[in-house]
Length: 231
Length: 123
Image: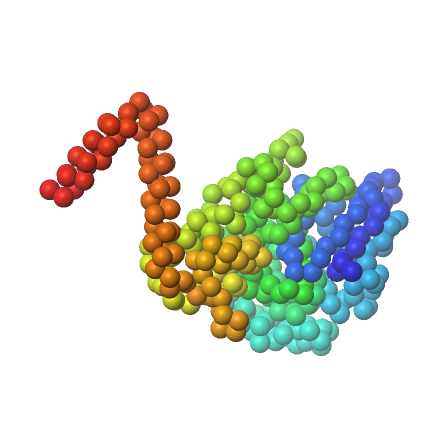
């Protein structure tokens, strides 16, 4: 059984079709890039996988289950905007995560927070935009989860932090987990990806191994993306 | 040691080339234990499965060998290392000769130029 199975998944917001009959099977042990231009449905797809939105039609199965309480125990989700109470400081947020998630690995979180130079007593609302993002990522990546859903994890941070985040994703790599990274900063992450999924107007237009793309086209994933999505 | 990847070339083959160079140049010495797949992947900033695949290929080429519990090591076989040097030399000569042929030099002229160059650097 694939770790994640998506069948005929459609999501409509009124007359807008955000996802149009998406089918995907993602196996464990993979780092997958969910790539598409703005408005292609990346965030909607991740939200459905995390049970924050319900499908209009079709299904998402994680370990064979619909997204819900059981799947949230094994899914670590980094939303596209802050969803944490921002009056709390880093220490309090680690407590919160520890209470909510049995797979939260506190020592991992402490190490990352230290590596990134975050002040453990600073309330989140006083942090810069980039620092907030770093903190959220630390909390999510510190879980020993089976599925990581990362919505634009590198969008708002500086290049040095980007490198750190990518190294964190690699060092966290685990044969039992699947990591899905949505982004449009492809050249920064493409060397880390096993599989690449291109979303265009709510449809999967390509699902291939990144290495296969380089081999067959002699192009980087970034270059192929620019061709597929030329405006 | 730096890793630099070119766009549009499979990372797998670039890793093989880089590690082969490190072994040939003695940056990794014969019999030395290699870092773990995860550490190598982190260092290079690449997918661990890709690194694993590259190492498996180096193993198939007998440049590295693995010991069940203790990890991967650089070959100690002098024959293999010598073969590797010859293979690399051939590849570089090919590249170099192709470039010189492109500007119209004959085999004889290339040999003459190499001889003169060797004499020059020895002088």
